[in-house]
Amino acid sequence: MVAAVAPEFAHSGGHYLDDAREAYTVPNDADLAQHPHGVKEWALDPAVAERLWAVSTDLLRA
Image 1: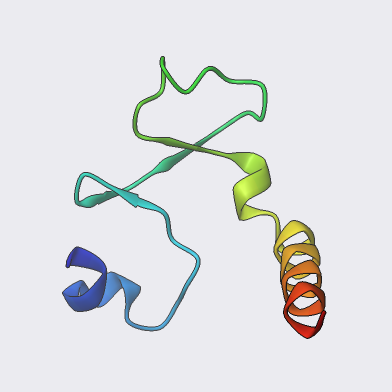
Image 2 (image 1 turned 180 degrees about the horizontal axis):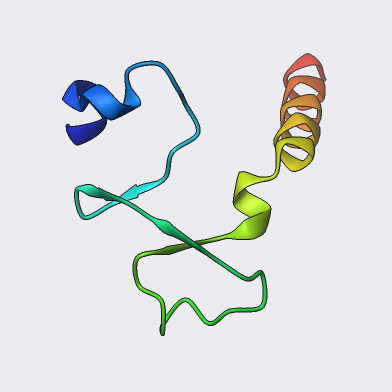
């Protein structure tokens, strides 16, 4: 619900929210058990997002 009404998110996307706050970035090799409110760097990588989109659309066409 926070993302739907928070003014700081009104004009941007790609935010990872956890427990009603924006998650902080941790290295890809970090143990998320030690960073319960973190998001790994790869999850915010635009190139990875584009690749995931391409693979997803290809699967839907199959």
